[in-house]
Image (tube, rainbow, N blue to C red):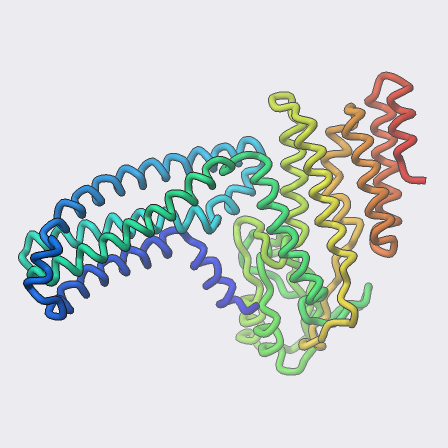
Length: 408
């Protein structure tokens, strides 16, 4: 995905974009009713009761304002719940929820439509035919609102809950994993350890690498080779190189290479499969805190993380294409994935028998599902978790039960 497609995708996920589109659609519908009012015979409009449009629009405007205010209050509460119960990094997924965005956009668009219709009626823009068309459009808008309200009520029953937030994190992590499996090296060639080009390419900003535009890198290199050193998710600064490039490149070409690395203040789920695992680990750590102490959520997160990591075993039947052979990219380390996923749980949940047993079973399952990827790292994680449990658990019988569940 190019940089501009990524930025456009992020823009379209903003709530104000969809709200603006619905509002513009409402204005357009109210305007078209005046433009095509000549199509409706006057006597027919009189018999149907076109003069009722004003009253209906007034009711619609006042009710939509109240519903929108209520919905925004619910959204703020859901964001606070997701932040305190799961992880502050998960709030972006709640904001980007499609049902929430559609509901807010529908309510705001209906409010704008009704206000424009009331103003147009007061200004004498409509005849009887126009009033009838406006009434018909109002009835259609009310039907859309009813359907949206029913979906919104169903959605509110689970919005902001920890389980729902964990499901959203899992979906985002799985999507990033599938994208990386489709292009394990982002479309580049494998990077040989110890081999790299001569000149380090440093960023001018401080933050996280969010995206790498491989097409822009290839165009700027013009047939030359380079070694990517900072994958999406890496924290970089002017002393931490993004890549290593050949010597003798012009300043303009170097600047184009820097622009291919999108750097932001926060990590993002796109192109960064590890971030989803990190957020799941934060959720488990939050549930293990003394204020919450919810071992059930921790066990649920362990199972969710196991599903996400198991997706890495779904390698494509044939090696993916390498459209950018001159760009050498390091592969993700499976041990890093396991540490991101289970490190916080192993450290903070060492004193819980239930968590220790489920953690050992999850590590054993991953070693069995994907032995080539996870067997070595899972065995090391299992041994470390067992050592921590032996220190934290007070009863020898509990330690024996965790040891019985550990990998052999």
